[in-house]
Length: 304
Image (cartoon, rainbow, N blue to C red; front, side, top):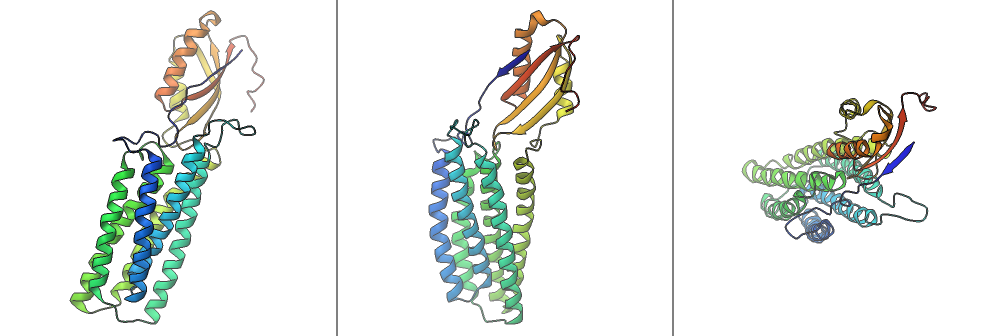
């Protein structure tokens, strides 16, 4: 006996509070950071600062990441499509993966430029670095605040949030390097800070890449323990056993499950179904497909 039940949680990022939706939050972040990236690139070239250019390169990657995340958010709101029964919700996972790739590319470019700077050092003014990066702290910090509320249950939003948080901390580091250059007169501090920036990006990019690849391959979503899930389902008074369990992500905010459930009393199927559905929802699985069996049933899928 097969039973299919749905419960859809809000689409990716719809829960950003205080009247600012995720789509609007992404848009504000994109506009603010695009303006700042242009200014930072210009300042980096004018004052020959690798720290500013590295930070601008990172910020440019984050603008692209915000664009990807916003596009995925818009696509995810299309719940159904002719040839896509889950709609385009998985676009949020692909956007997270693309964000990770962009960050890895940025790390390579920054590291290369820093090495060139070590080989061919140049004089750098500390004050312009401090002023420009200080503006970056304000802009990046504002974007972090805007994205903060929507990050907890969505890898897509969390990826953008972590990028902007890293940018804020990186800008703090650039301000510190500018102060050290003014104090010591050592321009070599600039490429050193650039390499530290690259290392910080690499750490955040690796975590995002690992999680995005796992979700892209329909791996078990973070925070879902199948053994614990089965144990809770089997605690139901009418459930004798649960087997053939599969859990995978539909998007960065929604998980799905299929399972075979062996019932003690077939007559109590409906209330059992409702209890199991509530249990699964409490474990972050809003979309479930359950196949019910009796003890006398020989399951044809036990070898799968």
